[in-house]
Length: 409
Image (tube, rainbow, N blue to C red; front, side, top):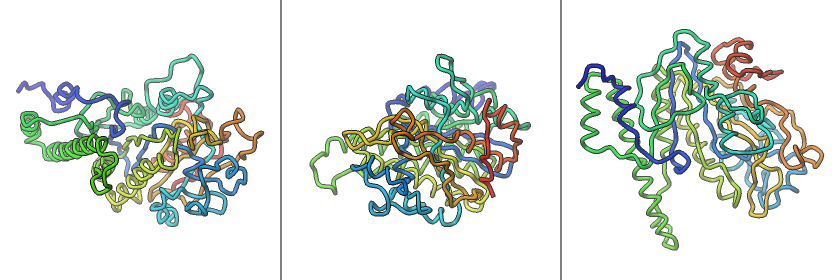
């Protein structure tokens, strides 16, 4: 083998495999970076525009029940009361012990600076770029987590396993990072597996990562096959249905394993939040994945959970009024989730704008009253001890954090 064929270079050039990110609901990019801190940060991008009004329900606002007659809300619908005004969707009920422990919180009526066109692609690009928005102007290709890494000396990339064609845009840029992601259509041939074992033979950490990634890829292949089989099983007995996939659990386990070592920042995504129709049923899957992901991180991190903050963000919210198919359409203001043993949680941070006709943005959406970037910045400020001016200029150019802060113990 040529001496200049590094492990990363070999892997990066050899695996142009897999289906496109847009085509696969199971494709979950994971990006890892190491940093000279003891605390950890996990960023989860909730792709598809999560309906914050359903996930963190302001049932204390009497207008909500009028707007959501097909989407029941509040304790009568099984939601878990948080503070007498907000209630948590029953699909996240397993996280209530974290809420009571102060390890879970939410920011509501938040958004990026993106407005009006409500495009998933532009919305996600702007969310991960972390910049302001000017119509007609290109969105930065450098992600805000990468700008964070550029602002801190001594950054080195984690030795990891990289498979696929793309990375998380939030971590794209000149600062070194390592990346790995599973693909439901990816298969390791016996020859490829043997070659990987040869490449990693002299590196125990790399060899362990190879084995872990191969196991996850096999899991994803089984889930993809199960999903295909399930399509042909309509009308058959429930006992014949394929079991639901758990790729997100494997992803969380992989991230937790790296975070217990040298990695200090992990970013990945959970898809499936675009609920235009039958939202009550459509949210069950992504909510279960989000809940299981956070609980898996907590279990996998062990004592390091107390030094960890999790920030889950989505590109925009959804319309305040349900549509004719018991779903919701693309909106503006929404909610974000924060978790972790480092969080000073057990509360919903919100400057509530109201849901009356005169309160809504353009007469249809929850009015944003805070910048979602301010809460991400406050989490990083508390976890990593970064100065506010670095966050407002280098990491999130043009951001005014305002009074947002004090999120971390």
